[in-house]
Length: 159
Image (cartoon, rainbow, N blue to C red; front, side):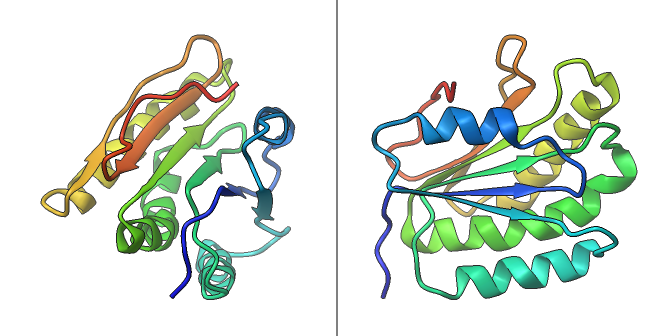
């Protein structure tokens, strides 16, 4: 069985700006691996989820993950994104530790509301599983920490 390392997986919608997220995590000295999986042009969310599941089957434990929303992420995107993030969260639950962050652009009010709805949907999904769900908007960053699993479930800044 794989062990949880310092692996970080960034999931990004097609057209999402991953630069700030990638820069923040690449500058942390304790990150052994930062991997990016971005939705391809024209790729459905179902196919994106399949690629994620294939990636997770490699056995590398994911300690932290992020979902980076494109500008204009809206309520119609929430359910498909819950399905995507379910695969990532399931892997973390199996190891008993992990954190997932939602990232949106600070100037995108629609995405902010939709990310809050996404966090609520994740709460409903993990209720009763031992997974803590935390929503916290970071000042001017557009970051919402949503899922913490295990004893290390503490609020962390990521920049």
